[in-house]
Length: 484
Image 1 (cartoon, rainbow, N blue to C red):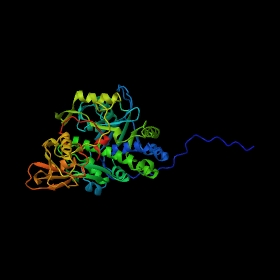
Image 2: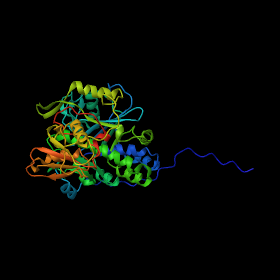
Image 3: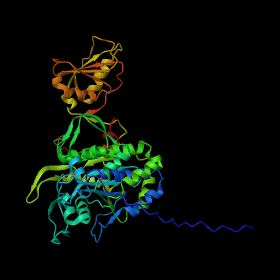
Image 4: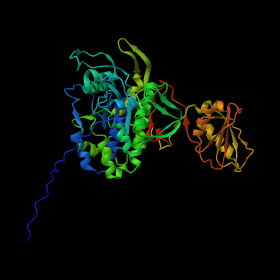
């Protein structure tokens, strides 16, 4: 009788040595996106040995040490994602190329709460403005050693005074949301990660130019590679909305990055999975409780994750430019609206007031449709087409005449938007609502734009004007902020 083979050991094989990842490239802005993308990529259940190496490569920090009187734990999981402004690993060439000069403040440039629902079917991302007015709990200044009984501060400065622990304590004190895990990133591998996934597609209805970061994008759709992506998520001076506008661009970028990761085959390609995972290593600091098992369990539970499974918002602002002696201008949260928002996180509820069906993305345009006058003409022999286009445009908000007419040419194929060059911004906003439309400048046409519907017309796309600065932030789904 042959000998019975010994039972197979259940112990994991020893981990192979991991080559240290050279930290190179810039500092700033959306590494929260790449961290979340690792969670999404893990959902494929492949590359276990690669993901297991996270334990060895992630630097550890203890943000919960000796913390007392913390908020009651809710359902689901809350992760505090912070991005610091460290730039010590950036050489002079990169500093000049990507406008990264200046001394760091040793504070947090990006602060987000990411809530993963208990059923692992929804991710809610809440951006906390860096200039938010905050009051710190009692603490010891980690630089001076001075004991503080608590005092007013800008939220992003909590890190400089008390590091991750004071940051967590301050956020918990303001939101009454218990933070389960802490992830800190310095964005050194941000550009490389974007390149590994093949770039990220973003859309803009108006020019975006920021002389501080070097961002310079024309209206339209762009696939951003590493350097341009970094400029996009860093820019605070691209429009009048400053940091609030930057946070919205970060949210859009995160949604597009998740869409790219879940639709480009990365989840099913072990080599791409390995490359993306390695790209995000080396610049993360996390609490000791966030390890390989948690990452893999979460990832496998999120197999159906998609942009429509995510929702994004910014904490509602009640008062802009709230002046504080010794601190300067801050943003004061709206107490009632922000409490409703954080209660939804605590109760594991969607941030939107009511569930919505999956819808087409709403395109932001430079000129609100309510300010654009439109005359519709039917350029085909199809009876009623002009009325159908007029009704659809009016439903989207455009000021149509409600009296469409027949065009002189009834053989038009591609829909035409005719406009006076003096109203070119309005024309581009109107064309954004008519996929495939051709723009045609007609000097002297006047303020009323003309839409000549062609046989290739098939829909009117929902569009909205830019959000007013200071307006309460709406909750949007990931598939609503991406490109059509």
